[in-house]
Image (cartoon, rainbow, N blue to C red):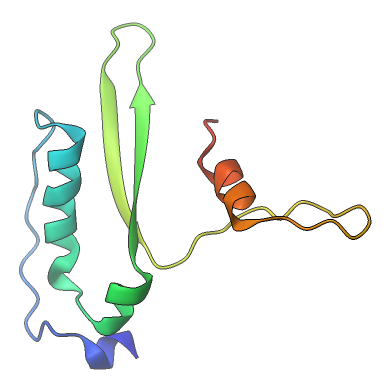
Length: 98
């Protein structure tokens, strides 16, 4: 369905993006624009962006990676009794540091 509704008829060629010296907000925007080569009502409704960071303990360098997603795999805890789990609780578990 997404491919049939894609607003981009001719996808741009691959390009190397070097924006490590930019702030995380600017990097996020640069990558969001790059991923706009897939643009449909489906991406408008369901697409988001994850940012992962890795920090070097020796030199303090931080490396950021941006990935677009259409769904998230969250861990649903086993329920004891009739308790409920909210979406906020699931998201907190998803984004906690490893």
